Amino acid sequence: MQDRNISGILIIDKPQGVTSHDMVGLCRKLYGTRKVGHAGTLDPMATGVLVMLIGRAAKASDFLLEKVKTYEATLRFGIATDTQDVTGTVTAASSLAPTREALNAALPAFRGDILQIPPMYSALKRDGQKLYDLARRGIEIEREARPVTIHRLEVTDFRAGDALPSPDAVGAPADGIGGLTEVDLTVTCSKGTYIRTLCHDLGERVGCYGTMSALRRTQAGAFTLERAVPPDALRQMSEAERDALLLPIEDAFADLPAVKLQPFFAKLAHSGQQIYQKKIGTALHEGTMVRFFDADGFFALGEVRTYEDGSAIKPIKQF
Image (cartoon, rainbow, N blue to C red):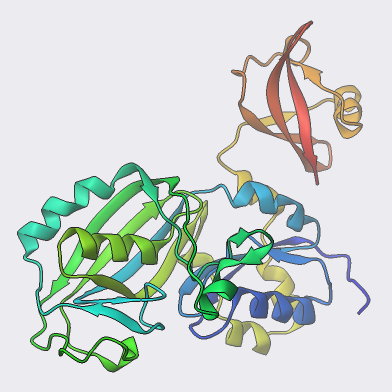
């Protein structure tokens, strides 16, 4: 493949049943470049916003992974599975169902800064091995709880079903059990949060088990479903139509202050040198991230740092 000289951000509405890596392969083919990445994996069963980074935009991956994300999830009560979602095998079942009052009373414990134990079926590594590879071999290891932040956790719908797990539910595929009490959740959270673990832990909290039966990401950083395109539609477009969908790299950082540099200071920033604030008339606080612009537009991210000669903005990623 001969790489096209093309860069930008594409928002895909990922369908169920395909991997994030499948979407990388599709974009490589359709945009004619190997330089494609994404900002935050979605499991195959999940749908919604997948931020694809094409060309120079791939350099933004580390920064975009830190952005807050919002999900719509469905929590099915009465069963627990080995994967913490309905793709797994039932490991525990209960004929109990929580009341709306019990569920509402449980929610505050999961808001704010919490600790979460990552699931075994995850891509996290231990001694060079991915946890899900160990899990598939029947090996479970102890995992340390990790801090995550739940900025928002709300129940948007509560459905009381009349079919609860039978005594022989344990060991059955979760998809084969229907009619359980379910709730729809809206969750806004930090990087590293597992929504299926949140569903599992909520089920444990209300005393009747729980597993995630659906997940849709509605927002990642500044990018929402309103700007997303399904892959089938992308396949049917002309090259010009697909290229027109690409958003400028700077859109990923629209929430950061913009600093326009005159040619002399832009040249210094392009070479990686810090720009002292007293010389360009800014007074931003230490730690502030900024967007650097020159006469040609956005070209770098900078961070305010303190040096012996004063406060300066140091370029930390060139685009």
